[in-house]
Length: 173
Image (cartoon, rainbow, N blue to C red; front, side, top):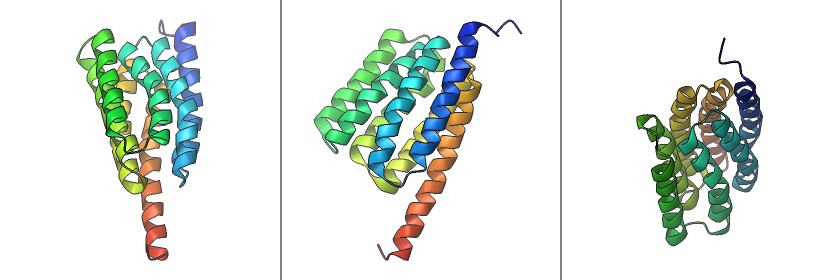
């Protein structure tokens, strides 16, 4: 058990904090509440990935904090979205360590498009795809809590999409 360093233990603890925040966020049917809670969750994910020395994932998670704020303030703004996509690619280029960084990059790109251009079920479907990429990133980083968090985020997104669809049918929307 040579992996049981203080840094590793802190990374696991921070990832479980992110887990709790993400479940609360993705179970919300209100997009505004989802965005606000995701800011705090992504600060935790950025710290977790830094503790696991997964720099592309850490950098993109930190950028996601800004992306959430911008997507909330400037929904469907293609110029700002393009700037965030370019920043995501720049972070990946500057911190790239190999093919293990591909899932984090894919997650950052998918999530950016989804948050800027989509709402409701469509947004959550793309965020579920990004969560699948984050599952892989967490597995590669060795994060137990992060892997569980993103798996639950994926499943919570699927359930919330079902709830939104059910509400639309019940209310004739």
